[in-house]
Image 1: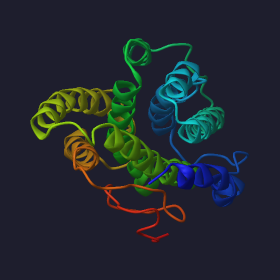
Image 2: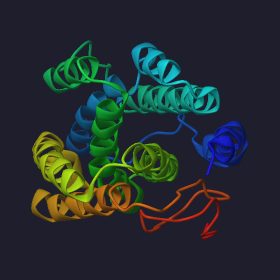
Image 3: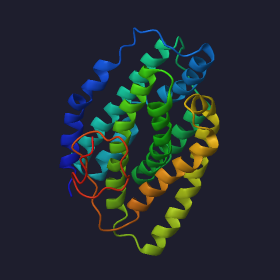
Length: 263
């Protein structure tokens, strides 16, 4: 499958997500207690910092790979990530918190990404997005503030498709790799995912508990999401395309351009 369906998806997604954006009325007063607001704000500060980049190096690597349709879709993916950063910034203002100038986890992630080629960088993205999926589910389902729940739903619905987008590209990249090599790569990939999930569970434990998800429950769920996504990448002969719209609770591996239409 080509990347034309992804280009169409990313072009049309802003109009699909407008219903979320219209409902996010940040002029309200939060019902969170001061402690709850501080813990959620502390967590969102890290996500705001991590999703605000311009993707210049990633896009340059994609352009060198020689698929202009994929590169155009990737540009729109970066725009969606920047939109998330802007939403997190509004949420921080709503919670009376300032954004971070820097954080060690973001610096480490950026340095590692910049040292890698396109495929390895996308593998890191898939780790980050799949283990964070359960965090946004926790916000969506358990935050004791309707606006934060809506923010979680808004980002969750995008991240599901971002994961499928990464799966598609990586599955294409590994399609001709011998099975034994794929198994070795998959094993090493798991170490990265376990480290990322542990960092996220620890660093965001306060916000997770506010949402009723203790770290011990978050960790296996986050790793399950990565397991599904990475297994899809390493399974040859599958194509992964965008859905017709946002999801609430889909399976990660989804074959075909619109194989599931749950809203």
